[in-house]
Image 1 (cartoon, one colour):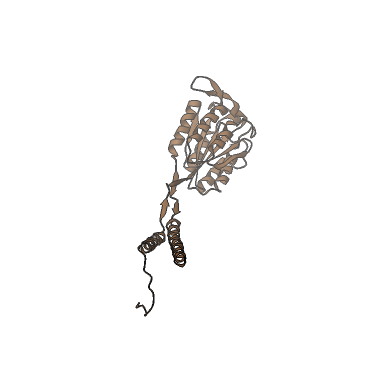
Image 2: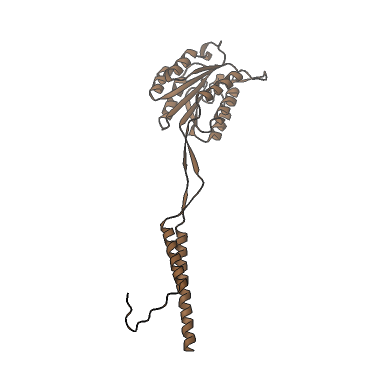
Length: 284
């Protein structure tokens, strides 16, 4: 641009050039959207649901379970200790709990709150679900609970000390349905193998249930054997989980942008005040 005759061209101050250049650099930095990346946050999603079905018929109060120290305890006492310990070792699985006697009852839905499940196990009392044994109905309730889940692996561990005496659904029919739904059933039999009548353990049915669904059958005659069984169940159903990770980001563009605005505003305010003071001195 060529100045016209008589026009006045204000001299550009050195510091004005520096400040405007610095402000421009800050604007460019703000447009680049700098971010602060925080440490990663991980979320673990369980990929397996384990449902524990425990027999609480009156016979579970029978005191014939030998402990490692030679003392004899009630069957339910041994079950409480061993199963509670099993739950404690499964921090990455969702655990559900049902008990059965005359009929099955859900005590805990599938949950990661294992302390709750262990509390429920500690409070189990023989006969609270009735004196008889409904194995088939317990399997049926377990299948219905699994229908509400979306995890790929579904495992039901059923423990009983007798044979089915109260079910409306035959146990083997329930096993067929479990197989069609992709539910693996492991069966654990406990108690006196020499018992007769309604107290006799139906090992044939339990073995068939496990075989039909791709599970295994175990027998535990004392506390040591029962602990070994649940240790084996822990081994053959290793933890299955999916870990998702993301790093939160904090936008920092406001800082250079704000600094640019403050820098320019401050410069022009100070320049205006300096000019005003000069004019006052000239007038004076």
